Length: 235
Image (cartoon, rainbow, N blue to C red; front, side, top):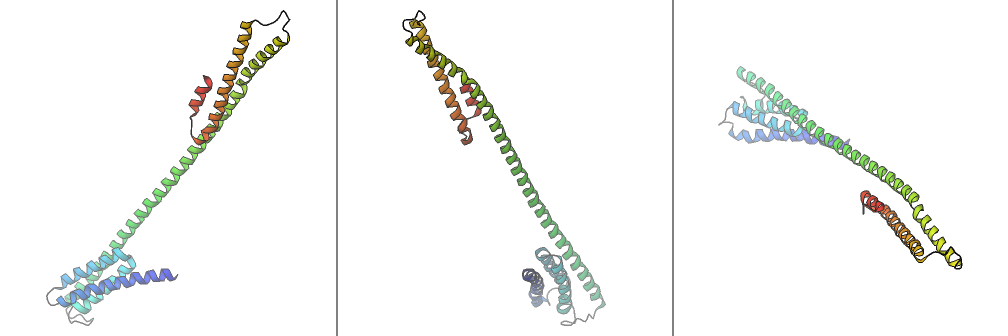
């Protein structure tokens, strides 16, 4: 409440000082300038008040400018008496013009502030929408990554059994062959070599699978792309 009251006091005090300052500057030249020049200068002061402080301080400035115009610049000076009937018309026209100028300028200022506030609000909403879109895109990317990892792991689980089965079968045959050296079913050197090649190729394939699993774990850090992993597993 104190801050609001202080703000109002500052605006109304500022409006009074602007009008008083304008009248003080014009007063020494009263004998050399006509009433029209004074009226235009005071109207300019009201305009500045409206732009700087708003409509209500501009209303106060209009009243003060009218009183100052009458008191200091319309004969008889330093009284609120108006000797010439034409000065009533001039004073009334001045007051109406000051009111109109002040209120119109204040409204233009208010509309400019509302327009700026609208731009700020639109910018804020745009930023929120962009952030929401980025979060949605990130969530979708994470979801697809999880789906891809699940599919790739399923493929590994399924395909890894083939080299293991071949390695197991080949190793079993070689062991049985060594145990049955006198049997007529002893493997020939070519057959033994073929079994060893099967074991070697199966081990190589398992090694590639292990590398693929490691690469899959690195996706979270962005080290590799899914395409590179898929190509490596298929080779």
